[in-house]
Image 1 (cartoon, rainbow, N blue to C red):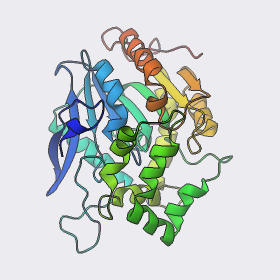
Image 2 (image 1 turned 90 degrees about the horizontal axis):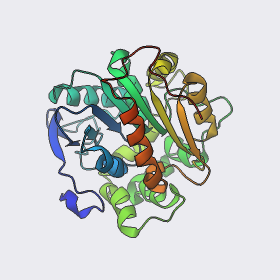
Image 3 (image 1 turned 45 degrees about the horizontal axis):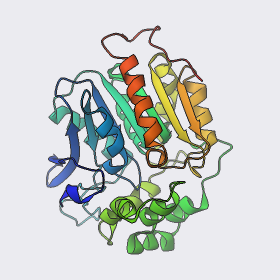
Length: 317
């Protein structure tokens, strides 16, 4: 697929066989010796979500932006027992894939994690292996802890997670990705941008991961990803000594104020920018403002001048 057909996405994706017969698409933009920013998308988006930030950073920073397996321009294998190649669409698989990609790219030093939606659980789950590698955080409408007690799972998410009919509709009509492209922003997205977000999932096969992500949401001890989300939640406050930038769209019906409050409590020194007129796809609604802000944050807290110690802190608003 020619990535140049996507608006504001003038990048050349690369491919890596993250598992036998299964290729992951990813961006590797910027100088090879630049400080590494790993940008992790969620569901039902892909690396396209980060395109404005990549464009604003790649002159100085090395931007690694994978499409999770089953997402974006990566392969979309089946998970049926008889499938070959076969893929388990689980959080642990995502963490293993990220680790394999960074090993493939020989990135063994410090990184900055930029996360959105499921990217938070993937990134913080990966960081459990060596938390010291994570030197800065950029957090946008995501989570690294269980559903807050005051927050109910939205019915639109529950439909996909619990309902066989809902799951069929998501895969048959690409309902989740199409709906998110319409309802995930405050500003109306141009048709070509909506199609870029959702068109990569058109069809029963391509839509598999948009449903499997929903079905993998850890809500209680019986869910496969529960131990990981519990471990990530326990680890989260230990990042309070790292420079952290939090950007948040307050109109997000899933990752709302309850989740933002969870990050504020765990990371009290974070530089928080919450927008009452922005939605889930925050970098669509606010990229003109956020990209310069994030660039300033990274430049100010360069890894050369901000060692990992108690002085590497960002004042909260």
